[in-house]
Amino acid sequence: RQVALAVTGSIAAYKAAIVARLLVKEGATVQVLMTRAAREFVGPATFAGITGRPPITDLFAVDRGGESHVQVAQESRLVIVAPATADTLARLAAGRADDPVTAAVLCATCPVLIAPAMHPGMWANAATRRNVETLSSDGRVEWVGPQPGEVASGDQGLGRLAEPEEIVARAARHLVAADLAGRHLVVTAGPTLEDLDPVRYISNRSSGKMGFALAERASTRGARVTLISGPVSLKTPHGVARVDVRSAIAMRGALWQALGPDLGNADALVMVAAVADYRPAEARSSKIRRQNQGLTLELVSNPDLL
Image (cartoon, rainbow, N blue to C red; front, side, top):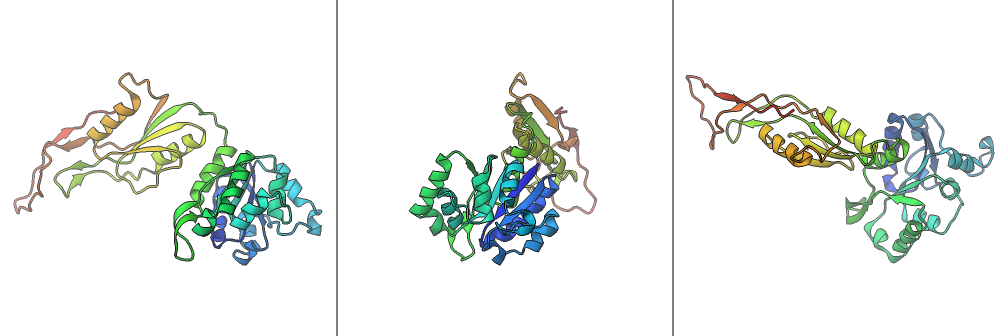
């Protein structure tokens, strides 16, 4: 699970430290390579502290034998270039090898994942488009991002670095056996909310984290995943198709749609949602007013989804 993380001179270089931390958390051994410009934004000591290995910053470091880029390229299962500047893309497309990053990518026979980060004007420039096309046509790289949004200058457009979680999710597909490829998994997660009126409901304290973690891991292992979730404040895992529902009845409908009438549309069903056992017999169309004598609610059983 050795990964080479190549960091170049972008203001987004600080996010590479988060990428390194997440990769280590996933169980990867991470060797960082840095260009001279990258060191203007993030210090090598930061990556050494995160990965337990000093970054490679010089092609001719005596203590590494002078060909560290060759060794890293041979040992790594994946090379990630994040962030990749416009200049880096130009040098990679031209086959340059004048720093540890470009030299390692040129030597690598493993997959190379590139996460561009630059001003939208640079990304849209014809020269950059040619470099991207060249690298893509060579069949050696996979792209993650860039994303639209605000960049460091305050301008808006396509050029932001993909989020570290997305980069690591894409990387994980190269590091984990795709033993669920071709399978369709349906996962339920989170609570259900049973409305009393427009502002009140009955629910439980389910966070949804377990179901989302299972969906994410199944997707990483190559499965096509449908995640049916009650209301939670969690990001959709990369590569997962999410269906949001509110009540137990709505979750039942989403399940039948995902599974099909004969349950033949999925290979496995993982029921992690905390489905409410009861719902109000009547959901009021307007807010129930406070009464001094108290309030009695009639509840009826929800269907057993499993």
